[in-house]
Length: 251
Image (cartoon, rainbow, N blue to C red; front, side, top):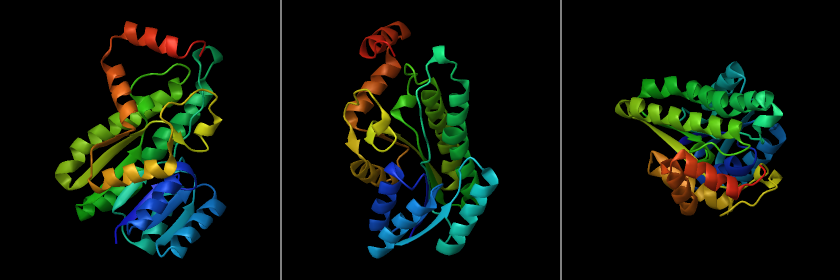
């Protein structure tokens, strides 16, 4: 039975993925800040015949996160798969002095991912096997208006995992960058703009789980957003600026 640790597991994609992987036979270690939500999710998994344990911790606190990983591994076994899912976002328009908000997102979206990988990687290297994955975003493919902090933090994760993938593959360890589009979660429900191709967290979890089982280098979905954002990567800056300004006027 593979052991999977998931950060940001209390709600949204993290919770849905924990349920999906538990149904597929994984022992699941749940990590997030809110202990009451983790306890409810762990109970739900166990009532369905699965195995789960949880640790309430802030992923931006490196020592606490490492201790939580050690505790979960002592209860479930060595980590076979890490999904660094914890993340958050808020609009950051340049005209509103977004320094504090961007620092906050870097702490969660970048350091939180890096600390999670750092907590499991030594054991994987010693065993010469394992799989690390991180939930980035299609927003990391190009800088989006009023989302400098979120786009930049997700681009950091994407490129970091590209390097990890190259470094770790010869050592028997896979690395996967996950790029969802708009997913119906408590985070996106705060958005006041139209979200094309909005997808349920449950469907997203199935797509992610399928990709992780295949140890894919990248999991990007839905396909419409995949095509749109890859096109955006290729167009010249002047055309990208023109199109994105027309699509999001006043933002």
